[in-house]
Amino acid sequence: MYSLSRKAEDYLEAILNVILEKGYARTKDVAGDLGVSPSSVVEMFRKLDAMHLVEYRKYEGVTLTEKGRAVAEVIKFRHDTLKRLFLLLGVSERAADEDACLMEHELSEESIRRIRLFVDFLDSPDAPADVQGAFEAFCRGKAGESGGK
Ligand code: FE2
Image (tube, rainbow, N blue to C red; front, side):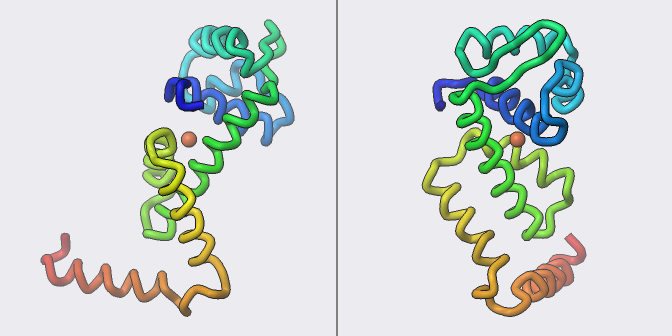
């Protein structure tokens, strides 16, 4: 999967998200999800089809092949994991989404695996009580120290 471009990975992820939400992926829905024009979507659908990652049918939209779905699921897992980390850190929803989308393509398997374990741990009953509350209090202290920065 690492020979795929970032853009191709983003498309596969968007297609999966649209399919999970609607049951199928039409060109205009994927265009809306990615904020790009329908003609760029069709162009990428054709490329992904040639790579056997999707099946594109004009006027209908796309479905993911088994191989395409496997790639999309890896990217989505990475996105969800990174977004959870950012939200736990108190980052805004919008920045958490945007930054997860940048980092999902770059991080090593090892780092993603450990980040996933870390966020799962913080959400589990094994986590020390109110880690997030303690972290927020610490951040407020730091903000006070540096004069509000
Ligand atoms: Fe993403």
